[in-house]
Image (cartoon, rainbow, N blue to C red):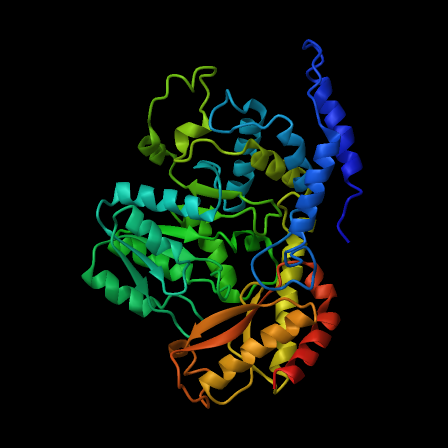
Length: 448
């Protein structure tokens, strides 16, 4: 079940890597194999206490297994253990990072830009809002009520005011509510989320961009989850327009460790205007001395960063280029189709309450019930029943305020409803539609 045949390829690649250092004096690092075997055996035992994130029966949180080439390239790089803060710590991996980031920027139509990898989306978003705060000092940051909670937390860290913008019935930023805030506040940046972590909703980026010219704020696109869906060929019309408008954003964040098939942690921040690099300017006389070329540490807030992340991303891009209609793009389309198929199947079954069709590959739903409290209780039982049958879902507390116009017959005896969340981010989820449905069918009976 765990793919291990590719370890043979790693052994071959290690010989090639070692040959590059053949001129060094002989040196044989020690490895205490008996103790290694003992400790790794204990690690393997401990790691069994996990959900099967690698299996199609895991459809809960945003956990996508890395591609074998990413896994192997990361491991291969660990024999060098490069640090991509400075060229002195990771010469080859630094250039690989620049090439890999340029491939991501090209997705959004940017040939001229400033960008780098980060430890994840949180740090990438922090850098984007930090730059916004430098360009628009003291001005408010806006993000939708369904945006990731870190935007509010980051604003607090940066000492910038923050306000949540109400959402419409499809969990997207409500443009009218945004306009009302813009009319009375000086806003420094509006965060448009393209793929919220809760529902996979995509904010109306074209309309937000139109308001930018009138109210002079920066537009930051948090596409940490959804960014790669720009390549999918089966998006809805409004969703497609939002992704096509990404090229006009001032900054973009995308997480290769989500749909980019990378190990944790690998995020990426991009700025359309490369001159924002002036805000990063600093001096480190003991670090940047071996090259007049730009060191990645000179354009990032983080210092030490794993060069292995860049190596893994570069290798994956070589094997699966970001081409419309290519293998990587088709896999994204299959993820979305899996969510569309499940939505259609559940919509035709009276045992389930649906909310809205998925924009990407995340589906929110609940077992049928009359009262909000009853629906929540059944969702809890359904979650446990599915897990007992080896199908792992996630729970999501949905605001009743966003459901009143959708579930008109429901009785709202509590402010939130516990719903169920299926994150179908493995292309294999489409092939597993029938086995997954069989488990859902059994779980529905047990949850009554």
